[in-house]
Image 1 (cartoon, rainbow, N blue to C red):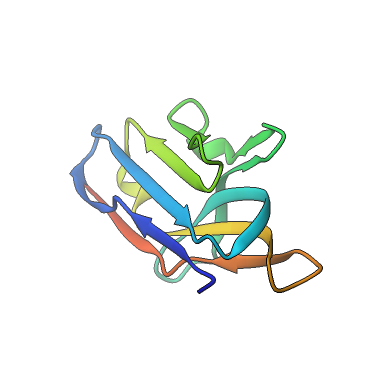
Image 2: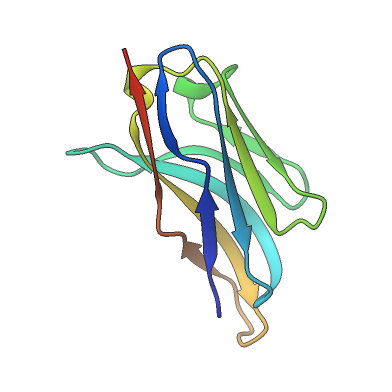
Length: 121
């Protein structure tokens, strides 16, 4: 089954930390980029951070120096370490992968179900 499974969301006080994880299923044969997006109520989904298979990272300005994206050793897991969290970081966080599966000859974007992050004042 082609899927991305997220974990690690929750409720934290401002200034605290959380670590999100996203595991890609074995149905993916090649992952080009994995990353995180978020969507707050009434707002559009926005990029948080991405990392390419070559190691290039990209961060939203609002999270630079606070969030760190990394890949697991198996290269099918991506992590987002979130430090110094602020109430404005509250959102549903979605894992994204631009990848190819064993069943296709081209890459597509895939999304996880999302994990809620709530930062209280």
